[in-house]
Length: 114
Image 1 (cartoon, rainbow, N blue to C red):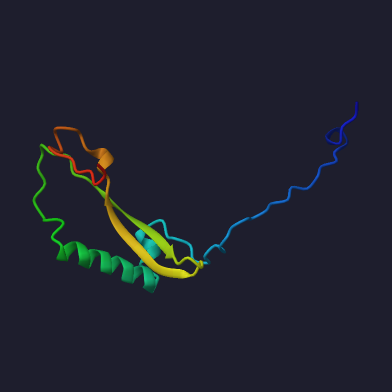
Image 2: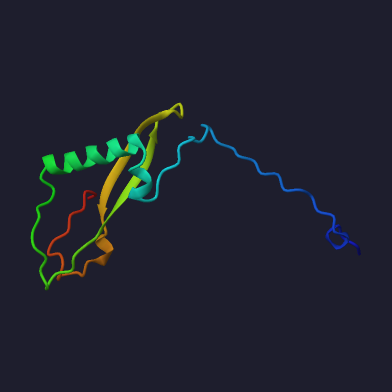
């Protein structure tokens, strides 16, 4: 039995992009050095830092040798409206909580989901 692939005959692959809304032309940055060069991401970063300082979410303390210092990472997202247009650019400063050791680095946990 002879098949098409044995005779080097292949059907071209057809890639279909099926989405309800078109994909945004802006690409989310993966690091701060990419984001800081664009003004809308720079505004999103400054807005997040201002909100964190106004709500008193952190305080600067000297590092302790008994505790593990946690790093942080910026996460960038483009928020879209229901019609697919860009609503806003959102930046979040996230703690790398996966580096914590239970009962050593944290004494209590907070979960907003019951």
